[in-house]
Amino acid sequence: MGEIRNAERTRRKILDAAKEEFFEKGYNGARIESIAKRAKVNKQLIYHYFKGKEELINETIADFAASVPTGNLILPANPVNVAEFRYKVNIEHLMEFLKFTAWEAVESIPENSNGTESRRKVLQSYVEDMRAKQEMGLVPKELDPAFITLMISSLTIYPVLYSNVTEMITGLTPESPEFQEKWASFLQMISERIFK
Image (cartoon, rainbow, N blue to C red; front, side, top):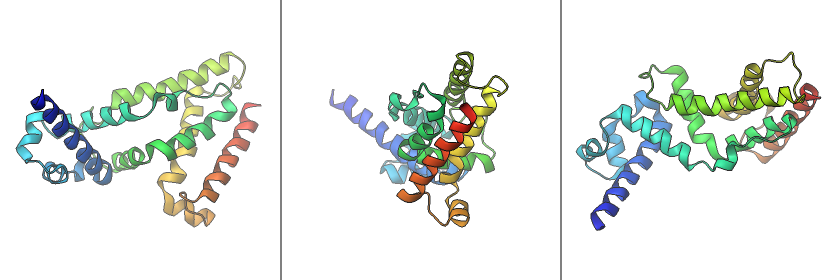
């Protein structure tokens, strides 16, 4: 039993170190040697648990996704509240991961090595949710649910991810309570205009 616990503990240390490394440096910048150093394990031990960097990033993202409380993925019934809800979830639970997605935008990474399928399922569930709200008459028929989802994603990710641009435009940092309160109110006002 002790060996199993040690194996689980070692695997956990590797995944935690890999998350830090990948989310901080992106897929291409992350190094197995650095992950081993962060985890305080021998590099060969990583290969004992994971076939390579590709499997390690997939496991890291799957592990991260499993750590996000499932209640944070259930969208509000009223579409007016969806953007503000997603913004708060991003700030409270997804900031590290969103930084990793910024690396994805500028890097060339192996196909299907970043949890693409599980992420696609979550994003498509947002589209389906918006489509269902549209069928209930809560969303204007002329608006494409996929484009609404893309718009909400942009409005709830960009300001917090690109903090320097946010500060240059607004004079406020995205981490400040003042910005967060004002942006949440703005998202609510915009949503009210779109969905009423």
